[in-house]
Image (cartoon, rainbow, N blue to C red; front, side, top):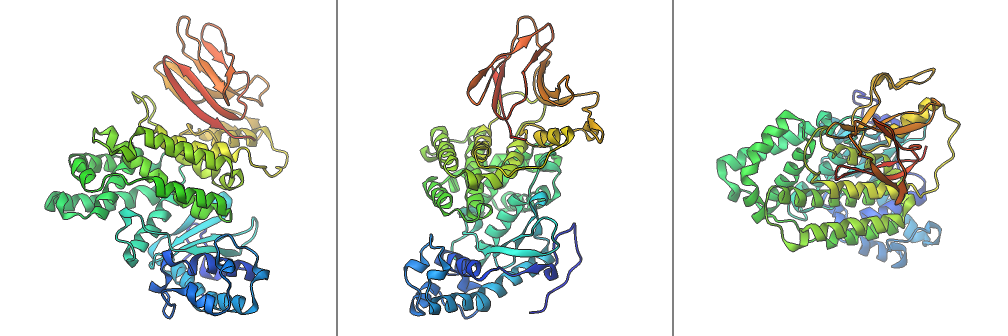
Length: 497
C-alpha cells in the first residue's frame, strides 16, 4: 500500500510517518473490539464486510469467549480464529483507517490531542476516528486504535453514515481543544468551526422557525449554544448566542435533555475495560459533559427541565462518575492534563459576578484529576525549581494567564506581579513564591477589618495567619483546596510535582 503525502502542518504526522497497528495481538484485539462490534456498523464503510461480522467469525472457528469484550488472551484463540480476525484487519480494518487518515489530512481533521503526550487524532470522512501515538524521541508514529464513535442524538439518526461522521468530528473538536493557558475562545480549532455550524443553524431558525428542525438538529443547536456561552469572551460567539436565546424554549421542547442512565452504564463499562482511556472513557466523559452543559444552560436561562436532568440528577451523575473514576485511577491519570484544561476553561472571567452555573461540569473533570492523583506516578528526574513551579502552575485549574516573564533560566522569577487565581471584590488569591525562592505560596491580599479567609485541603482545615493586609497558606501543597471569603468558596486542585 503506497503512502499518501500531504504538506506537513504544525508537526502532525504524514502518512509515510505512520505504521499500522502492531503487534498481531493488538490487531486481533482491536478488530474484535471494534470491527466486529455491530454498534459501529463497519459494513457501511467496508465493502464486502457482512452486516453481522461476529457471526462470520464464529463460523470461522472463534469461540464465543474469544469474542467477549473482556477477552485479551490472543494466544488462547484457535489458529482458525486468529487467521480469520487478522485477515479481517488486513482486508477491511486497515484500509478503512488509512482512508480515514488520508481524508482527515485533506479536510484538516488531523491534529495533536496534547503535544507533550505524543498523541494525534484524526476524524475521517466515513466517521472513522483514528488515534496515533509515538514514543518520546521517535520520529515514527503508530496507529493505536480506530473506531466509529456511536452517534448521540445531536449527531443524527442512528445507522446513518452522516451521523457517524458527525459523531467523529464532534469527538475530534472536543478532544483537540486544549486551553491549558488560555481560554477556549482563542482556540481557532474550536471556536471557528463552532461559530460556523451554530451560525448555519441560526440562519435556518430565523428563516424557517424551530419546526424546521428535527430532534437531532435541535439537540445539536442546544449543545453548540451551551459551548458558546462557556467560551464567554469571543465577541462573535456572544453575538450568535444573543441570536439564539429567543429560540431556546422551542428547542428544549423539541429536544429536552435525555435520561442519563445509559451514559452512566457506558461509563461503568469503560472503567472496567481499561485498555485505552483516551478512547471510550474519554468519549463517555465528553458525552456527560455535553449532557450536563445543556441541562445547566437551559436551567440558567429559565427553561423548565424534566426530572431526569434536574440539579439532583446532575449531582448524582457527577458523584457516580467520581466514584467509578476513583476505582480506576490508572485510567484517569492519562486524562488529567486534559481534565485540568477543560475545568480551567469553564471558570468565569475575572471580575464576573454571581456563582458559576457550570460548577457541576467543572466538578466532573475535577473528579478525573482527583482520581488520577492516586495513581502510581512514574519517577521523574530531578527538576529545577523553575520547572517544578511551571508544572504546578499548569495544574491549577483556575489559572487563565501565566505571564511570559514568570520564569527565568537562572531560577524562579515571578516578576512584579504574582499569578492571580481568584478575586473577591478587592481581595485577591494569588500564587507567589516563598522567601526561600523555591516553595510556591498562596497569598490572600486586600482583606479588610477582621476578615480572615477559611480553607481546607483534601477536607482538612487550613490555619491562616493574618497581619494587616495578608493571609498566607503555609505552603501550596498538592491536593484539592477550598478557600472561602465573604460567603464565596473557590475550589481548585494542585497536582503533585
